[in-house]
Image (cartoon, rainbow, N blue to C red):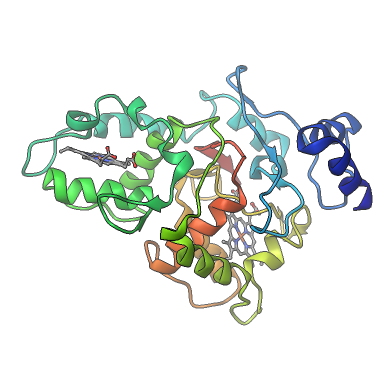
Length: 290
Ligand code: HEC
Ligand code: HEC
């Protein structure tokens, strides 16, 4: 513990991360072994970052990839091996397909998916169109219902999560930069409250597992910091891409608590708060997890 703090104080986060990597082993009990995440042999991700003051109790932020087995890690290092990419391809088709009463596709207005570069890195944020804090899912459905005259997609449905993966991929490698300005501060505070609230029969908060015990084994799993920069995440366990709120729901249920609905104000606010706990890490979705 002391050793790590001293290192950071003396050299800053980047040097400390390099020192940890050079040592080959973690300096503190909870730290994962630091490795480089380089995708397709050329895109280097930021998997270790320094938290902003006042956001969390984390000393360093770690991408969830660092906590996975070498086999699972390897799947995310090559887009041909990453099963999440099949869904991205499906989304590319949807992007170009006209739907709804206006006869428009996403491409009609947004052009190439690359026009979405940077979007994933800044969401959730205050939306001009919606006049409130919005997630990417909300923006997509707003375009569908208000601009295309099409049916909204189910918040955690396959089409929505695939489209989110396509949008996310455009920002891969960019540092997460989610802002907390006055317009969304109350949402952020609410999200933070939810993060530290103990729930369920087990009386566990998100922080109990993901802040105090990351790096430790729980059942067959190893606890990560519960970061969301890697979402959507392809899970080997259910063989599909999973959105952020679906993951939140699973975690809350594990504490044997009544869970909130995906798309609920609670989960939107929680997403905003959790996103800021990972500011500085790269957008790494679609990721691969067990
Ligand atoms: C009729 C034109 C139109 C169509 C069709 C359309 N959009 Fe949009 N979209 C907009 C406008 C206008 C905005 C708000 C201004 C902006 O941010 O570009 C927007 C905003 C967005 C945003 C937020 C972007 C940001 O920078 O914050 C996302 C994400 C998005 N659209 C996705 C989609 C997807 C996915 C589809 C297809 C399912 C789609 N849109 C279809 C016009 C359209
Ligand atoms: C009982 C312990 C426990 C609690 C409490 C818990 N989680 Fe989790 N969570 C896990 C486990 C186990 C995993 C899978 C391994 C991992 O990535 O940590 C996980 C995974 C995650 C992930 C995926 C991380 C990644 O990189 O793939 C997110 C995000 C997450 N949790 C958020 C939350 C949030 C938000 C809360 C509070 C609402 C919460 N968790 C509460 C145990 C917990």
